[in-house]
Amino acid sequence: MMHNSAILLVSCPDRKGVVASIADFIFKHNGNILCNDEHGDEASNLFLTRVEFDVADFDFDFAEFSQRFSPLAREFQMDWRVARSADRPRVAIFVSKYDHCLQDLLYRQQSGELHCDIPLIISNHPDNQRIADFYRVPYFVIPVSKENKREAEQKQIALVREHQCTLVVLARYMQVLSHELIESIGSENLINIHHSFLPAFVGSKPYHQAFQRGVKIIGATSHYITRVLDDGPIIEQDVVRIYHRDTVDDLLQKGRDLEKMVLSRAVRWHVENRILLYGNKTVVFQ
Image (tube, rainbow, N blue to C red; front, side, top):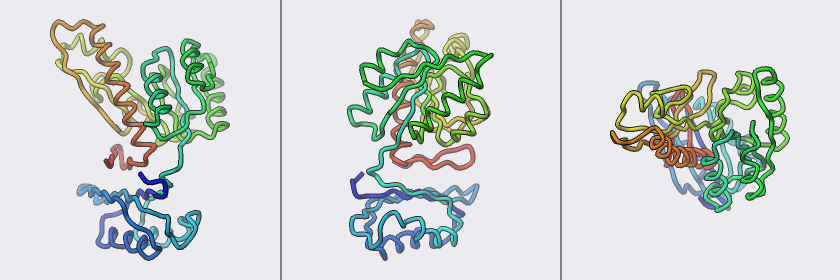
């Protein structure tokens, strides 16, 4: 992605002229298309596209883009958003005791692989304080119990808003989020990693379930969070082969390697504006 580029994500009813009209709009305002990817879903008659374009020579200030593009968007009934490639989304990480996904995200962010800022980590346990200190990220411990869950989540929401985070990543945060928290932050702004190849083995201890079932592969799934547990739109999945000599501990170890890779890919694609949601599905533009 170029520093002076912008990314336009569009979903709308599939009809003639959508691509031509977007390209013509960019051309007329002295922009240059750098990359265009698209997908048509025949079953829903929906058209989805991601357009990256150079705005260095645009004939109007980019802050006016929404106002200028809106008439075209209304004509084609577009659901759309636009962002500058140089923008760095602010990401809050929620974590419990397991540290592998947390460490991986922090390393990738500080090495420049993840184009975002991580201004805080929120946990219901103090265990990962040392990791946060090493990466110099503020670490907030908010214990959660049945008795104080709503109060704890209100503190979490307040912190996310205070630090102006537009994305919350659950990096093995072992609490079920309330409907209130999901609605406050927004399903499209909440990414989870589930230690199973969904929709198989939902809920707790999926590796133990997989071991008892005698499966030959296990997987990990990163998805957006909805009110239905482990049922949100899937962003990324991966699998690894299991052998008859593997113990539950072997499955756990193999699974952790998958989890951190799958989660980091999902976060990277989100912050690079490569994902479009439709129904309970996603399109991920490469």
